[in-house]
Length: 563
Image (tube, rainbow, N blue to C red; front, side):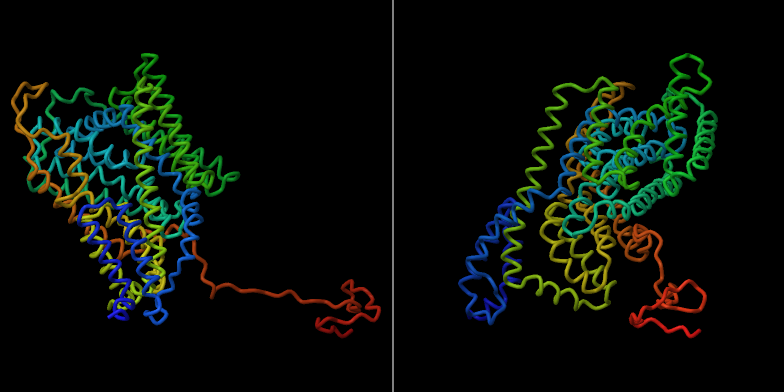
């Protein structure tokens, strides 16, 4: 009996951890307690394990150095920076300005408010990287407007919750930082690999709203004329965009000789700065050569785009590491809040409190995971997992489908931090054994973990929206009409189509790895490389090519040239 238990310690230990979590114990303490308990059991059962258990009490002496490695991890320092940046931006009123302006821009078309929510959700994802901030802000601002003008409650709640979760996959996502750390890969590569999948997922959300607007136009009506406060002016905005392209292209040509591949990004930056300065002068001087709509769109969109460039642009250009980019983003968020007169001591206190809470949460989970992994690897748990998963039929594709289904099901009960710190480390060895690129694997897991925010009954995005959505009927402040509230069932049913879209996106990333693999840049085929070895002329050559007298020196293997 002892031998049977000793040789099956790994599955017993893993099952025990799952039971601890299902009973509701905190993740960090479940990991640490489970690790210490089975460490002691493993030391006791080691003589009966036929060498499969390698635990010894002296291994506990390595824990201080393992924990110090967690504390000194510079990559994870980006988490508090991006969290602080997101919370300050949430308090700065940027989301309100974006939703109001973009809502006016898309308002005249059916589904315009839904398109605005998706577009702003993508922008907030690229600036804050925090799901809670995006969902709560859009739920407070957009949901009452969508209900006021007759949007279907399921569509409205689903669009808001799904758009908020884009912060999980669009850089600078916190989950991508954690995944890069756990997979032992560069955060910059993970960000580069996630850009196209994030944009494709955003496009799929837009396509869903487009289909709804065609099939059920009464579910997503256009804004009435009286609600379009910025009036018309699309032509002026189009002219401004053409001017941006022209100035940017000219700057690109001018900078190409000195900046090379970076000239395209720098040229676009010059074009955007030029149109922003022009719009600012045009509005303040009262000249008003641009329409109100064009002025508002340019002046509201440029600051968050500048912040995105400050963070992601510097990372992709190689100017800053992700941690340094996060630090610059935190400073940039403070400047944006100050520009809007929203920066005060209360905002800073709230941001610091929330940042400290999240950072401590992540740190304690990491410490618990280190204790658990010490014991789990000591009972050869990684070998058990590798043998279990490498044997899945279908090779790479079969493994990725199996892991995607496993993570999708576990996401019903575990959030993305728990999945990243508990499950992901166990999947690295079988993924590498099958020759799977870990950045590609990480993006697949990131898209998959995004569903943990959306599917009932424990989707956090649904809870965030439920906390700000009206439960009962209320009197609309603008129209004075009593409007029905949003039920929990409507929020859940509204999320279902977007969960299906996210599952489709997982399949697309698996089927088309090129969406991610572009992060490697231009690949050189070794078979096309030709190496030419120059002809060596020995000392003392007399062929008239400038050889020196040999003076009796050996040729050292060089070919002898006959005169």
